[in-house]
Image (cartoon, rainbow, N blue to C red; front, side):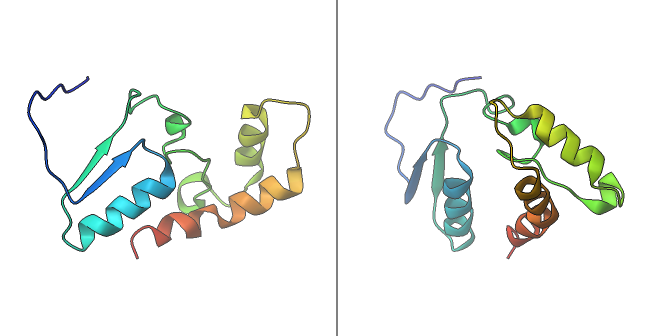
Length: 106
């Protein structure tokens, strides 16, 4: 749903778009007491790769997905578009993805 406000809104930090870097910055700013606004043009439930549940990337969580990374790797590879995909790089990405997510709370 688009929220239309016909009056000035004040904030300390305005983020245009919901990319992960900007979200991390606004989360950090809000945690330090800043009044933040995130302005996103797209439907936030379907924008980018949000359907994976991790904003814009696939994440392997052993406690949720089990000890076998292969099915998650297969889903990641299957979701890619184009003729080239580096399987070893994707595996390393998945192996480290949950540590990156845990870092969001630091």
